[in-house]
Length: 276
Ligand code: SF4
Image 1: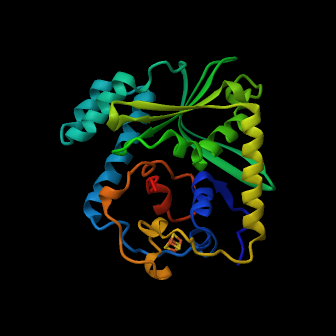
Image 2: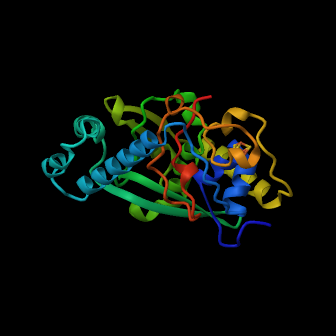
């Protein structure tokens, strides 16, 4: 089996391949559902997923013009979510250009495939900075070094540089004007920022091309050697890789991020970055 001709790559699918080639195969080529529990605390896990999704919806409504007070009134049943909301209102949008695009999808072509990115927020200043904002609701702020290498950081900046011209007055956005901010609303809206450059864009393009080519040419998709990556993977029983991990062992970030994948399963994209 191979990828369908219309398959579009996303940061989520590429992260799966980076983490475990077999996971990529099962999910995107064989398109298998394998409903193992991601954690030992499924109800709490689901609650956190719903909170994250609800927070993103609130922000989207706010950026579309719904008054903050009206949205806050809907949060009386959830003190934790209300706290995230207050942190967002206090710091989430500070310093961002006024031209804002919420929940916007951009795509470009690479190696004959579409490469798609769905952004929580793009804040642009004509002829000035272009800031990607990604809201995180996880309980931990990861190390900057680990986030730098995530496919989300790589793909989001690259796609904006390649495909953001129509949002930027018709001209390509110089990489040096692009910045990506992860904003941790459960941590007082702490912000981790990643600048961009032409040199970094060249490196990213080489890496992405290499990954896409490797996937297209792969004759086998081996299981990861790093069994820590299996702890929260739905395919554990299929791969004979043990039981579910504990919820407290991983962040729930990126839970709510990803519905840009065209695949029918969203579980892995919604699973948080795991700090190994
Ligand atoms: S259980 Fe482990 S080896 Fe199997 S697909 Fe998941 S991450 Fe890969």
